Length: 227
Image (cartoon, rainbow, N blue to C red; front, top):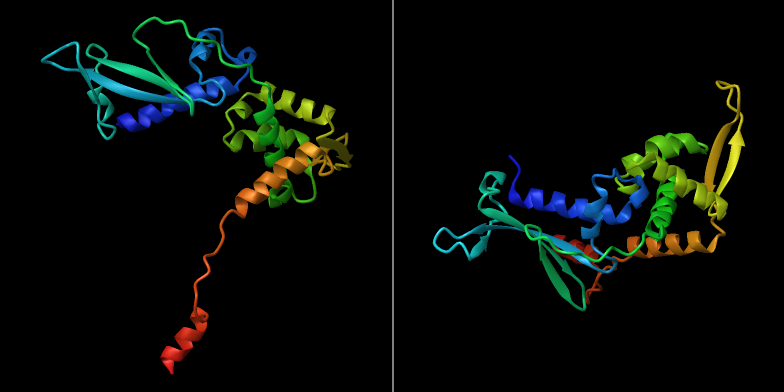
């Protein structure tokens, strides 16, 4: 049985995902919930509350380590909070409210994800000498955990946009097992957008810096102790 904390994480991830996927890719039944997706720069926080038996007007937060059986729809509520560095606001999902529509998704995050994904694929031994467009789109991208990549149409659109902007370069190689060449893709590492994303990624990977400790090297100290 899932814990309240696990369910909270699932719901928060769901609302974040709604803001990342273009509305055109969502089923009509889910589109209204997109209004509750956190706007850019905000974070979403979900809490579970139970009404007090002594005073129904008061409620307490359900412990995060409690299991899901502690949540009773007849006596409990789910509260969605939106927070930013400047301000915060709270909306109780049990009360009908009008929420501001989220900022349009401009695809910037998708573009960065795509660059990072292709850079990984180019280093992945499973692709050997080249990255096949179809395998990258249909198999590799969905496995990386990007929310937008779970929709095949979104993958295709993202790749088409990147190819049109020459962020990704197309090619072809002879394939003896097929009657036509295999379409390949690779990063255009001379493109400014690619350079910027890879620069940020490199900076993140090298964020750790060893701490300098005064005194002789540790190896010298160990050797001295042994003597």
